[in-house]
Length: 312
Image (cartoon, rainbow, N blue to C red; front, side, top):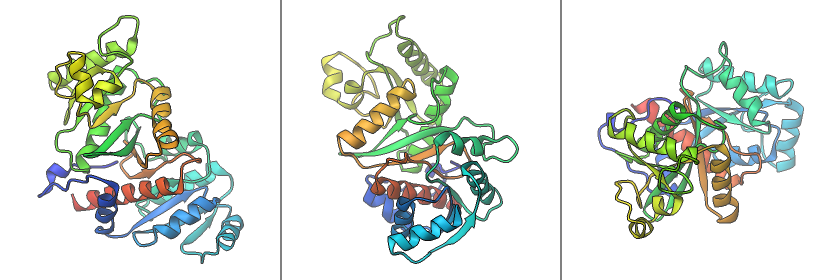
């Protein structure tokens, strides 16, 4: 993501649900999205349903992509660029973004590791030295809920968790949450020397109190129940500005984040959008098993972020 801090613009726009996100994205100029490994019927469906806000460049096996358009009964609606294997396709998509031919980058039917390798390439990639992290956005009763990191950082250390929080806080502010509250999750809400996640959480909370983490309020360790439910926090005697009202949930590692995120989508049936932070440009990276609806929401989020960047 780039500089999307709404506080630097006049009139903070507060996005409270996905319908408002879609309307906000539609209010910005169209964006062009480069899709790596676009040989996927889901990609064709997403491009068709997002045609009002974005133009797509489909990169991959050209003949196969053309065949998928015919199979879907859709007219070819964008440029098709023939590329070799998935690595070549990802590299070409990144190149289009770097040279300005596209504003947003999208992962198609390829492994996350291949996609990220192209982004992180020191010579040709998008990374500008920042930590890259993933953020999933869900709806809740009174607004939007962010969860990080579900897909990129496997076992982040303390300073990496600090950057993960700051990345998520930047996205939260872009969505209109002026001072986001971040709960650093653990299995318990007390420090236990045998549970490293609780030690990191306590240190991050202390760093926040001393102004070492910018743009948000951080507390932890907090268990999931008392991070989200104020009554659960009261029952456990937790006095916290974050407990019961966390905007951002910070998972201790990728396993916890990934399982929580997928449980919310596949078990609880939650709609979700996701973003990649630290790249300087909006990146659409969803699981290959993600629903079409959630892929569309992720495109909407990336288009909104691109619009915020242009308007900043």
